[in-house]
Length: 551
Image 1: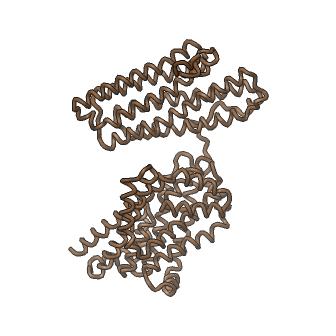
Image 2: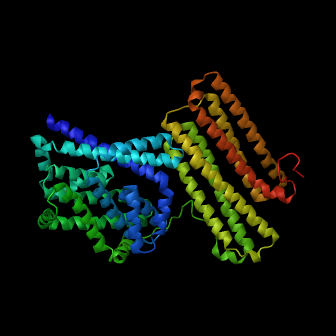
C-alpha cells in the first residue's frame, strides 16, 4: 500500500513538473515567439553561431524539442541549409542540459516568490506580454515546487521495499533501463523533466549510479524521437534534421552502453553525490556529442540528403504558379503574371470566408486549423508577389503599367490583411467559443451567418473589379461598405435588445459576438478598398468624408 501511494505521489509531482514546464514554454513563446524565431533564423549563418543560437533559444523556451520543431520548419521550407541547422540542434541539446543544471540546485525557497509574482503579473498585467511573462513565472514556480516535492517523495523510496524492488527490476538491465527512460521522455515530450526525475531518484538512492547514467542517455534518445514523429511531413527532406539529431543521440547511447562501467566509475569519482552525478553526466553527454559531431556535420548532411531526397510538391497551394522570372524583361507580361497570382490569393480568401462560416456553424476544431493554415498560404503568396514586382524596373513602366502595379499591390495587401483578421481574430474568437462550449442565440448566429455570406459576395465582387476595372462594379463594391455597416448596426442593436431581455446565450457570448461583428466590418473595409484605384482614376473618390472638405 505504501508503494502504491508513493508511486501516485511521484506521478502527480511529475505531472506538476510537466505542467509548470508547459506554462513556461507557452508564456515565453507568446511573449517572445516571433523575436525568438527571428533570432534563431538570423543565427543560422554558420556552425558556430548556429550552435550558440540553438543554445540560447532552448534556454529561454526550456525545451530542445520546441527548438527542434522550429528548426525543422525552417529546413522544411528551405529557409536555412542543413549543416547550420544540425549545429543549432547540437546547441539546443546543450541548452537543455543547462536548464537541468540550474534546476538541480536547491531553490525551493524561490517557488513561493515566483508563484506570487507570476500570479500578480498574470492577473494584473497591463499588457499581453506582462501576462505572458506572469504565466512563465507561475510555471517556473510550479517547476521548483514540484522538484521540492519530488525530492521529498523519492527520499521515502527506501522505506518502501516493494517500490525499491520494482525500480531495481526495471533498472537492472542497462538496455531495458535505457529504453524505459526513452519511452518516458517520448511520452512526456520533455527530456528536462525526465532527467530531473532520474536525478531525484538517484539522489534518494532509489536507483544505482549505473542505472542513472544509462537512463539519462535514454532520456536524451527519447527527446530526439518527438521531432521525428511530429516534424513537418509530406516532403522526405523535412526529416533530415530530426533524423540527424536522432542519429547523434543514438550513437552516444551506444557508446554509453559499451563503456558503462568505467564511465560510471569516473563520474562517481568526480561527483560522489548521485543526484549531481546524473545531472553532470547529462551535460557531459551533450557536450561530448557536440564536440565530436560538429566537425563532421557536412558529411552527415550529405548522407541525410541521400537518404531523404527532396520531393517537389506539385500541389503546394502557397507555391507561386505564374511568376515567371523570364517575363521580368517584359514588364506588361510580368504585371499580368502577378495579377494572375493575386487572383489565387483572392480564391484563398474566398475559401477562408467559407471555412469561417462552417467553423461557426459546426464548432469543428480541425476545420478551424485548416482555415488558419490558409493564412500561411496568403502570407507566402503575398511575399512572393511583392518580391516579383519589385524586380521590375520602374524606368520601363509607362503610366498605365505603373497604375496596374499599384492595383495589384493594393489587392494583395488588403487580401493579406483580411487573412490576418480571419486567422488572428475570428479563429481566435471561434477557438474561445469552442473551448468554453458557448452557443450564440439563434438570432445572433443568423446575423453572423448573414454578414459572412454577404462578405463572400463582396469578395467575389472585389475580384471582378480588380480583373475588369469596371466603374459600375467599383461603385457597387463601395456601396457594400454601407450595406455591411447597416447590417452591423442592426445586429448590434438586436444584440443589446436581447441583453436587456436577459437572454442567457446573449449574456454569455456578448463580448465574442461584438468582436465578430467588428472584425467582419473590418474585413469588408479591406475588400471595398480594392475599388479605390478605379474610382480614383475616374475622379469619383473624395479625398475626405468630412463635411466641407469633400470637393
